[in-house]
Length: 297
Image (tube, rainbow, N blue to C red):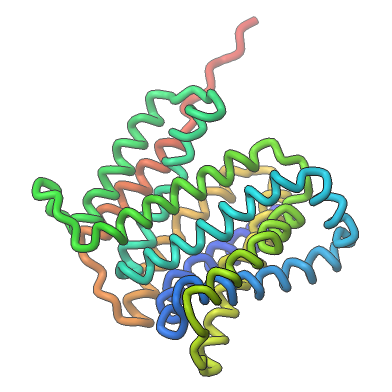
């Protein structure tokens, strides 16, 4: 029964994450990237507060923060503040069908950064995975014209790749965090909100936004930043086969491209699909553990 629930939670999370690239582009029609981050962060913080309350953990929030205030301040400034600001700007500059696969290479970036900052060994298959992954990035960024190395929007590509560095850095800093994960994510949003609100007011006045814009940004806050994270955690907690649940994430970018083409009419360049296949192949190779050696007597 637990495996069935785990699979259900995992599929729900993956399907919701598959919709966010489309939601990003729709929301950016109404908000600037910083305004979008403020509104979505507020929605996500509110949702996580409700979740923490019903889980009986909300009373631990202040104690968790006071145990390591500067640590949570740093985490909040990395994610959501810097990460989502840069990611939303990348989506603002690039077609979502390019920005989403580029951002998807964060797991490969994490392998390299873990070797540098955590002293983890890089295996031969990790190097192969990195090579395939970043070849896929180049294919997407150059629209298949690899030899020319000409980028339609180098700033957007650079920001999408920078977002992978920030996301990987966030998880490296989180590696030894023993606090409740829901409270940890909630603290990040609460800490970052004053900074993002201040920056949004400094950069200009907020526009008059119709209800469609608020609905779109609310969707992003709930299903990119908030509730989906809890669904994924529940899936990993309930399953006895973490690899099977984790591998569900590989269907997300392909569903995302399908939604982008059908809902907002983005043209999916053949090089985007080819590059995404290279990135996913790299990630699959990275996860492959090979045959177990027989135990010696």
